[in-house]
Image (cartoon, rainbow, N blue to C red; front, side, top):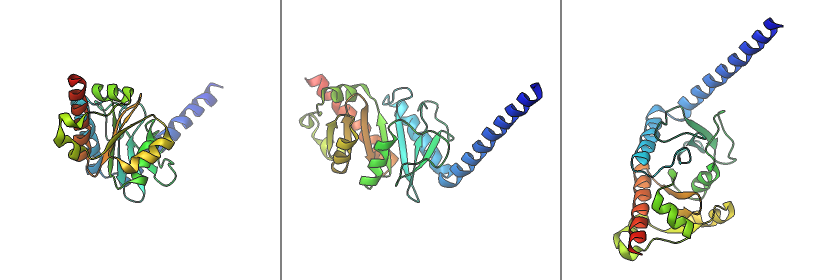
Length: 208
């Protein structure tokens, strides 16, 4: 009996090991090393800017062939590694590897399917969370140059149907109870948009 249990355990280990190798090979093909480095570096910057919150922040990138990469569920931007990414088909939302994607992966799919964005971030900076809870937009009169740089922002509840309507018309959404969702053409512009939205939220809270 012990021998049978031992063999069963080895079989499970071998199966997991085989799947891990398949996942790694698929990842290396669909997310080249330079792209993975960009994703990890951007995550670290989001963390260093105090825009992220534990395991709840998300970032994704459009890939070729109608796919996208997104950090895995329950991964922290502070310790994110190149292996911590799920790959999905944008047309049906199904994963290409066994890695489980972040919780709000559907919102990222909407951003790529409804806009020309190449990068998206969901983060939880304090001022943005406060404004999102109030369902209030920051006051652009306090920082006029920010309006053109942010280029359309709105508030929403975390409702997929509502977000489906709002995403094509905006570049940033303060989502009540969830955080700030932004998207853009590059990692740099997307991160800059997130930081600018939060700074404007900070100014608005301080002013009023």
